Image: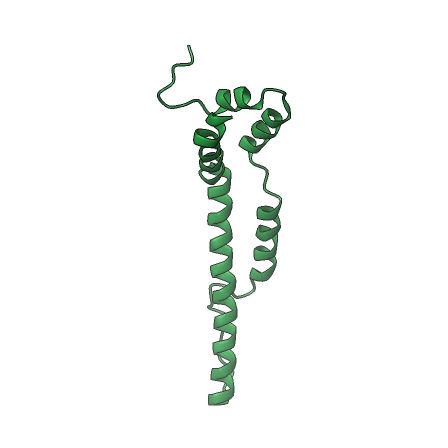
Amino acid sequence: MIWLKEHGISCVAESVLNSEELDKTVARLLIAARSDGFAHGYAECSHHVNNALKVDWDTSRSATHGVNTGAALAALKTEFNNLQLPVMDLINVALQSEDHVAQLKEIFPDEGEDLS
């Protein structure tokens, strides 16, 4: 149990936080959030210009023109919320076993420990 307190918890946290699946999903989510924010900001600014100058501002050249950025952001939020990390499957199996510390040591060996 000492191994779990000293090494295991940090290994589990590092494995989850450094997982490639999480990195890629968060990166795509950030891009979608920026695009959606840009689209809403551009639309609001265009609305103000239209009202102030009494013109019909052309938004057809906007990068988000005709793109449903809200739906894209919502889809990525759902993907993030349902994200399955392979390392978590391994951890869940290890925690179900009677000797979960030994199982976790197999998944996350000490860097200085020789397993051969």
